[in-house]
Image 1 (cartoon, helix red, strand yellow):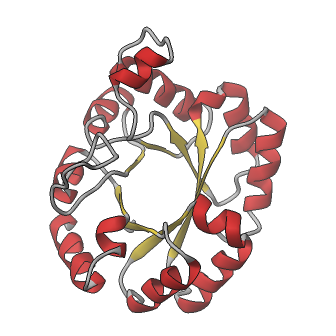
Image 2: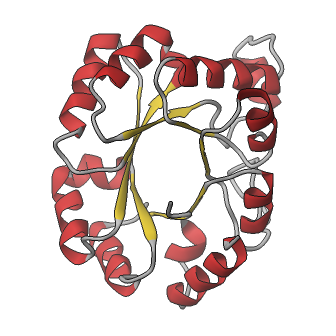
Length: 225
């Protein structure tokens, strides 16, 4: 399994230049709202044209009525992507319907976003603790057909202890500590892997690096185990 996912949260030209620069490394590329809303399936085709061996992660966090999400997942099976996200907040029936048509795609359930903390839970009137909410959402996801979960590095060990093995995808990874980060629950690459992360997601530290190849090489060395 490839361990490092590069989030292409930038403009198309910059994203494609980065893919060209990093061609040959064992990477997953995450395509989210910024690129997919602007360019649709074209961005998937262009990344594939540059690096056919790369794995693709379509991060759309699907959340709608069950039949609508089912149809979205069914459409995604024609795009040649390897991973697709949906919100576990959508509930059991939504996830079941999605998993029925996922084909070779690995469905990843999103629990609590890395920008959310206890203040968010209080704002939303949620009485569960952060850990209790994440565990419940994770259970709903895995019991109904998700292949893995997107969770923070601070929760992955707890979830694997409670729920057993699953593909743990951990965003909010920083190769070094960053002050004023908008993601509240970050971790170093090696910290995340030690806690049980199978795939780590890195965006800005690679996108904004003067030498992205060196950053990628450094991360790959640090997570190799």
